[in-house]
Length: 432
Image 1 (spheres, rainbow, N blue to C red):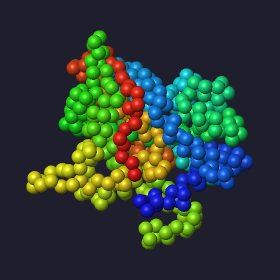
Image 2 (image 1 turned 90 degrees about the vertical axis):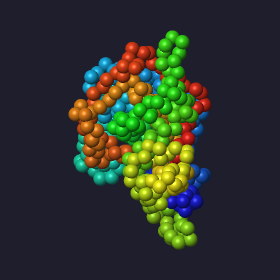
Image 3 (image 1 turned 45 degrees about the horizontal axis):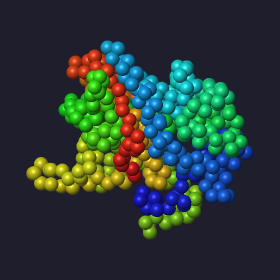
Image 4 (image 1 turned 135 degrees about the vertical axis):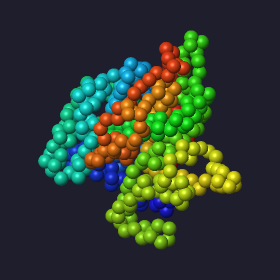
């Protein structure tokens, strides 16, 4: 993997961008040619991917996080009004609404429940559209779901909803308009973005809650860390969780989050070889070769993670790399960042990782402090994972996961709020 990273222009993502734009977004051939033209350097599609990073950082990220916590709070407040909830469906709805409201603004099509349901119907078998083998015959429900979703987004663009959207949306809209795409074509081009926003964030949020609440000792440690380092009480008695303090003062919470990603990710990073190349003076790759880098295998490999590679260790990503073995001797943790691929492989790293991390950790921090959650039968058993043509790399849950919800007596009746310190939205995440 390291050898491949040394050839970023020869081993590239570019053909995959064209493939996705053609098959998932149905972009007409003549406009696809313009989007993928590399005669004057990187293609427009490639530049859009590159330009996504700066609009998901700095002040733009601060603005998105401000809206995110404002949207998240009433949803968490409302959770306490129910004795039982389907945790899988509850998290899916919460993340869906918050993420899309942040991205698309006041006219967000997902505010219509029908559109939300349509997207998740589409996502369940969205990979079948990539096969592009008469999809209206082999996946008619998925085909129709995409048409309904994109019709709603065409209306959104016709109503100039983008004027109230995020900097990310504005950048994409301007780029596609310059490329000559119509509003209908831009609506189809939004499908990969929505998939990227939601399909991994939702199951990741579920599994973080699952792993923490299933471990009483870890749950108490997380609660203690958040209370000590990120919880403040305002003069009027409002309990305030500071996201900046979650970033800087809650290393165990961040470590648990990354360990969940390591254990659950099934991502296979794909790159295309555009010129003959020899890797590590040993491996000859011919032009046209597809290179696959499986996160699941590398994320569990003992050369990167030691003999505990197959075990969940919430402390694995703490800064300290020295542990004590059974004989009382110190030993080095062999963890290497190259084995962690949940956010992709450098130089193409998920640009939305900081926003999704803020969203998930804000949700987890407040729910763990305010509520006791347990499966209705009292047993924390991992639910089955979805077995369909989803594009998610995080093992989305199949079906319901009903849990009881009880307000913790310690905080019952308290008012809650989030605080966001500008410039502290980017987490020290491990990347491959």
